[in-house]
Length: 299
Image (cartoon, rainbow, N blue to C red):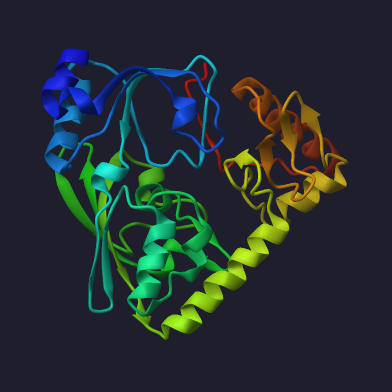
């Protein structure tokens, strides 16, 4: 499989036994059997086809900002869509972005071009592709608010374009959380604004994040989805779990909705904190918290 991947994308874009802690914002996780960085859509399609032909599992990762990889790692191919597929261009009020582009960079680009509507995304650490799959959002904005179309590599290996309506966006979900497909590119439709005002709004949101979120620690952002009629952080605090800790994995004292890595946590410790938070919150309030974080490589 290593030789096949190297032939498809070049030896310098394939790694064997690659530590996933280098590619996730939790900074934990064992090794991926292979990690590959396709340079374009053709290489990506070829890698996916090769994995299927060889019956080797694969998983697509962007910035790894919503992912907890097990200490045992992942016995398959990690397809890393990041810097090699991160082009951003503007056409009037529209931005066209490849899946590997960081949302924060997209927001800065929009600001520089005098385009408003993406300010909410300026502090989201993920890539465009991952954000679209889960309809990422913050401070009252979501991907569905700015997306006009998405180009996806379908499970049949063919590019297909979906409108915003066809993407079936919901709270932390889209059609791609229900069916196989890899985001290739998207178009955002924004509106003209004054650069100074856009920048001021981004700075305002940054100050809120610094004040309320544990940005000084490795994490995957908000760990739990917002339960209907409740706030996850409040439920966790009410269950007496502020600062709850196992090893270096901890419920943040600054924001109970975040599970953080204080420095040397293992993936297993983080997973156990998450599990105990879910169980104790359920016992206290009857609400079962669901995770935003995805688990990879777990039995």
